[in-house]
Amino acid sequence: MKNILIVDGHQSYEGAKGKLNRTLTEHMVNQLKADNRVQTTFVQEGYNIEQEQHKYLWADVVIYQTPVYWFSVPGLMKTYMDEVFAYGIFFEGSERYGEGGLLKGKKYFFSTTWNAPQEAFEDRSQFFGGITPDEALVHLHRTHIYCGMETLPGYACYDVISNPQVDRFLDGLTGHLKNVLSL
Image (cartoon, rainbow, N blue to C red; front, side, top):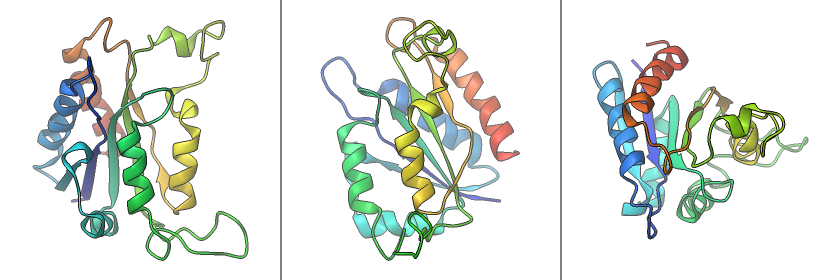
């Protein structure tokens, strides 16, 4: 049994109400709660910084369910990280830069929703030039590695506005959870 924290980083704006990210978050909770202890945070609904810090200390695995806006997480999610990831709790100084992470032994991954189609990543001649969504989000991974966390492979839903395939996304997420978390 694992302690799993799921952070839903959706931020609404006109045209993006967050239904898909909420659906994916709720799906994960339903898939995981029978055999694990699960807590959630919906960043847009507000949070208490100290309580969030305790959730990270409690968690064995942190899963971020978030849309990608302008090649990163939404502004509220970035603010959440800025406020919650505190010196002395998540990291400290060290002789060698980047080795002062205090969350060693904890794992995380990003489950993301992109409006970009899958081929924009996989086809080297298209926009992302053959990199994966995880590689496109290297700055977010570096943040977590800096805090001592171990990266698990991410999950991505593509073309979510132009061609939403919710049932396919949910089935894929179920399989991803089983593979990555060894359920």
